[in-house]
Length: 140
Length: 140
Length: 140
Image (cartoon, rainbow over all chains, first blue to last red; front, side, top):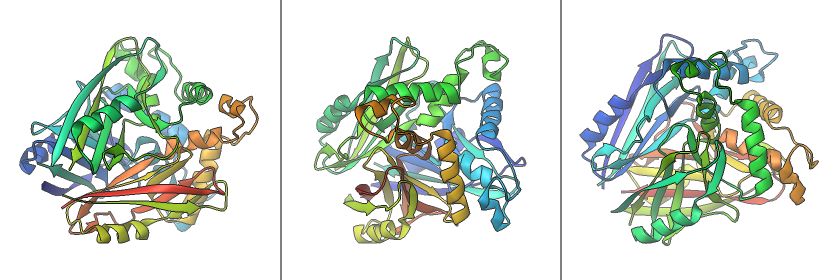
């Protein structure tokens, strides 16, 4: 069994934004030498997501608006008890649960085995600082 | 290490519906010869889900109503910017994030290692056309 | 390839609550002898979740309030058709979809390869009875 472990670092200049990281992950799959296996990609921070969807600006606008409706940013300690700790990012912990922590992708014949529109995104909900994403590939 | 890769195709006649695909996946686990390992099942399209829950008609009715409340179908370009591309399926991209892209299931002694009520569903949110589901099984 | 399979049992005294199970999972990773691989942890019941987030009481309060808003407990057969079966837990099937069924965690150098605040939780939405969680570890 082969394996590859890599921690990527991203520093998103906005509080909330989405970054297409597909090509970085694809490069690591080639580097791993794995022909048949699984590739795990997950946020290592609990106010961020890794998810698969469309690389379309309008959709990303829609996601941000929708997540803001489902879990609005509110630094006050009234709406979110979590913000009584001195944090202001309780909303980000909620948004991340909607979008998910991780994706697991099949590796087939040495490549990410994707449908026509699948792209991997890093989803940031409390940005403006360096945060890590794990890529782990196992197989043969 | 053994592995099996299979793309299943489904053509759901409704815009939104759920299809129990557990027996197809179970058949592939047997075909793989894997005794101990992991089985990944994911939608290859970004307006569809694979999820595990109950095979109960009332619950499926409830899910559809709930998803429609959380992210209503609206083909106009006002509510969803994604629909300015000429698409009408922005709602489906949102519903899929709630229900998830994929499941990873343990394979133990050559079978899906499931609790009493776990069933695998293909969740369609923009149907009436052929769409693919990936099954990847790795192990020994 | 090495593998370890374990079913943990939890009996949460409340209808809804979250239990930190990180140390149980870490112990099983050591027991497996796997140095490089993947660790799957999933609820085996469809009214429960396994998720990764912060071990902070205020946040857990916020999650419960938020989930109750998104999918309120209502045993009547009016709001949820699922409750026409005699069940009263339709809300729990919805809450579980928001929080997710499973997590997949990288195992690196024999340990869960975690960011600074990542902790694994069992999320119960229909408790007061014994329910199972699967831990499956594969690798080398």
